[in-house]
Image 1 (cartoon, rainbow, N blue to C red):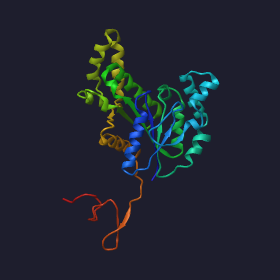
Image 2 (image 1 turned 120 degrees about the vertical axis):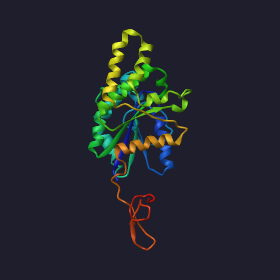
Image 3 (image 1 turned 90 degrees about the vertical axis):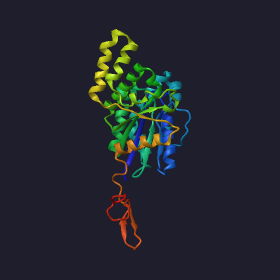
Image 4 (image 1 turned 180 degrees about the horizontal axis):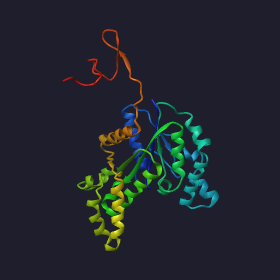
Length: 284
């Protein structure tokens, strides 16, 4: 059927691991096999079973202790070490997976890894060359919509990752279930610069007017950034997100049609409604 993968990225604390856990639980419920992989060398605990873990290759704790680096410098060292060992380590890990497998990579939260360093571009190129259909899932905390300046910065970060990684891309607004006021949520799912810029100007002052206008124009010209809301208390929410990702990576589209015997002992293709036209629904 194919090999599929999600790369879950976004700022620190935006809910990437919670998204992975929610997705895993949903896939368990719908009987879909999914494997979660940890790519955060600073991670400590998980709510989902980890199929393989970057900490088996390199951990932030060991790097900080042995090289005397700080947390950020140590994490960058770990990820560059991964980049240098993609073939040896990641290639070996992926040998255990093939057609019909679906991987979800839970990634660290340093946004420079996705915006201007080469680490994740090398990583996604390695996956694509190995035959994986890959989608990036960019998570942004819904709390950002309470501060228009933070939201614009988050949207630009998402756009930068889209341009850098050049992959099918789904942006997710996480922690929607924690929002006290959801009245204006829809305004941020499909950002309209004409509506958001007046709010931004009111919160930043006149000396930033030109900068604000340039940022709004950038989002408007690319017209790529939109968000899907994730409410972990609503099963339909994660189902909608997974559906969009499946479309983006064409999940299951190359699967062979199932064959079953009809009531007269013959064969018919699965997925139809039994009337022979294969449309899967009632005829009118």
